[in-house]
Amino acid sequence: MRLIKAAHSVYQTQYHIVIVTRFRREWINDGVAAYLKDILQGTRRFYPDWEYIKTGTDKDHIHIHMVIPPKYAVSRVVEIIKSNTSTALKTKFPFLKQVYWRGDGIWSVGYFVSTVGIDEALIRRYVAEQGKEDNGQAKLVW
Image 1 (cartoon, one colour):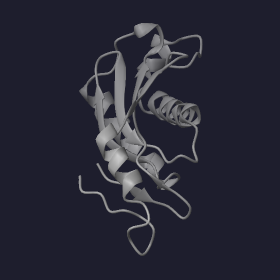
Image 2 (tube, rainbow, N blue to C red):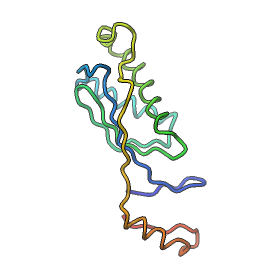
Image 3 (tube, rainbow, N blue to C red):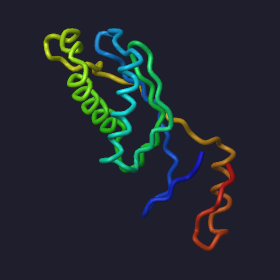
């Protein structure tokens, strides 16, 4: 784990996000999964400060472990991911229009998110060492 320095903040905000297919339909195969990962990396062109650490898929859901800067709401990031992937997947794989024939989205309305944080001992050390370096940031060894 590493700390990321921005103009006015230092952060280490990692999230585990799970997005489920609508009605838990099992349509994510190896080809769809590979294309989905490409789409996710493509979003970095517009959001270069997003970092995808690891992505994984099952037949009816995806797992994304990523760093989201604090200036973004997690709900907005999930909304962008769902929107971009839905449009691209429906264009590339026409069978999805048969699976969801009414034109509904391909992702479930909800999602799961949890934080992946640093341990309490490291936070205590960080707070205790504030002001001990010239630039005001304590260097932490991970």
